[in-house]
Image 1 (cartoon, protein in one colour):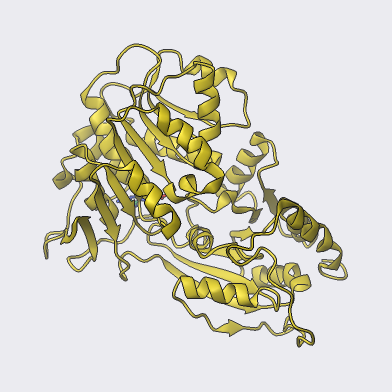
Image 2 (cartoon, helix red, strand yellow):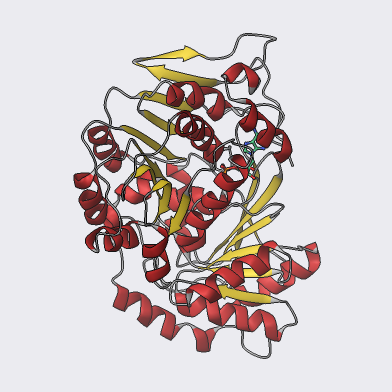
Amino acid sequence: MGLPIHESHSRCVSRVGRLVPLQLSSHPMTFTSLQLSIPLLRAIAEKGYETPTPIQTAAIPAILRGADVWASAQTGSGKTAAFALPLLQRLSANRREPGRFVRTLILVPTRELAAQIGESIRRYSRFLPEPIKLLVVYGGVSINPQMMALGGGADIIVATPGRLLDLVSQNAVSLSAVQTVVLDEADRLLALGFAAELGQIIQRLPGKRQTLLFSATFPPPVEALARDLLRDPVRVEVAASPETTPDIEQRAIEVDAPRRAQLLRHLIQTHGWTRVLVFVGTKYLTEHVADKLRRGGVLAEALHGELSQGARTQALADFKASKIQVLVATDIAARGIDIEQLPVVVNFDLPRSATDYTHRIGRTGRAGERGVAVSFISAETHAHFQLIEKRNRVALPREQIPGFEPQPVTAPAPPAPGGIKGRRPSKKDRYRAAEARPPAEDPGPA
Ligand code: AMP
């Protein structure tokens, strides 16, 4: 499935101090005109890509000439190839020094995204005359094979921050010769949960290096942090336009919280949705909702961070291979994961922030496909959804599905669980909420 061809009116712009139009009318860019090598062009053709996407058109030349890049582009807009192709070209121009050194480090927030990027790089590099040594390292699996594989260093490591630090502290790898570091889903890596680990990694990198930041979102609090990491960056922004905005129909359906699982099953059946990614707020609820769906005859699995890595990988692989119809996941599936032909994403629970909303719904409508993103809104989460709409500058009509209309609210609704920004419930609160919810879910057999 290819992304749409970007015509002369594409609004992609690159900015170095000021905004510069990138494409000349009636001369759409080609991969050849981006000066990519023949082995890479072969791999691109094999993938079925015909023209570079706007983010690729803008980022590839800058990365090839060694500049720092700060790139924002919509979900599903071809970011992986935008950094992987020029990096492979640069790596294949020189040989690796002997030792425990790494030349390119790609940091990502989740194991699933690490595996996916590793797979893409393997495909893009397959025709290079000299093989590229690529390692994907993340936690949840034994560290020993990773330590063994790191013997002699690597050209590229794709890593989650925690496991990379473990490997560094065991002297399995040295980051002192890294030439390029990529932060994919950079805003997530710069945010609180990862900031300390990221700081320790950055400290170990050479000061003179190329730094590339990629994400669909850069909320203001992380912008300053991002700026600190970069040296005279080329700022690449793909402005929203009909050509570059993912084709996602957003729907907001009002329903009482206890009836959401029933409504979900009803929607799956009436719309004939073949593949649905459902986001919930807690690990417990992934299991609970998946279980309810299974009991209602829908093939569903849960995906969350407390499953073994084997179970996580299997659930995602089964979903991608259409062996299961519904994957009920926490936000570990919200970032970067590329599932071809995923027509529907459902926010069973609303995400915490407007940024998370963008990433969640961005799992559908990828690579030029159309998608639908459905959010369930109850009296308790109504105000929170309004905030998400405001931040994302959308105003969605509220729908009600016959047979699932919410009961009229008599008392003032309590504040939204999962919270308005700045009022994040503690882990304990969330467990309590999860514990409290199941008995109220769907009275009667699902
Ligand atoms: P990404 O944003 O890197 O996750 O890519 C989203 C999807 O777009 C993936 O399925 C890629 O294989 C696909 N893709 C990336 N670049 C192109 C291109 N130039 N033409 C067509 N599809 C592409």
